[in-house]
Image (cartoon, rainbow, N blue to C red; front, side, top):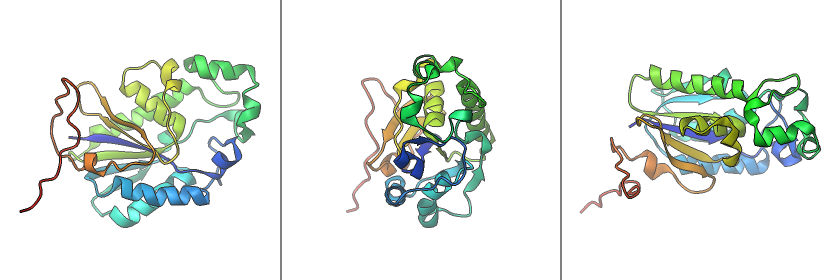
Length: 231
């Protein structure tokens, strides 16, 4: 079974300042974010990951470093994937979120994001199209059935979740993706299914270690397979 593991970067200096950083460079993790990254490594644990795609921005690489140091190996394909970079917010980049809420465009961002193009930047629809192209390419090019892990940004991950679940982009603001959160989608199911959304504190290692090839969900799932106790 191949799972799509979506990881949002940990708490950043832009998060702390309440700034919409966008694609600006030089945004790193705060002390809290570094602690979250260390905890995230244990929450994910050892997993059968075939490919890792990382946004080019520093905060994403910093988030994954503790996990790679402990669980990375030479068989994993690790790539910087430009299509998973944060939204180009244009002239909104670097501005306080509180001030942006007074802009006329803000209402459209919240209600009809599929129609929004940021001044001097890109549209949210274009962002979704490029990010989903990266996901489809990754699953299409895999040489084994291991999982694919993506380390990216809140709006990018929200758009991937919305597309995977057949939601219109105008609904993606109903999805919450916190810093250092893990979202897991069974992407190889005939219809992709959400197994975990916005897990920002708990362990997901048991689920990622579940090698079951098929999940029968009539009546709900049965949860990760419990490990048999040795006698």
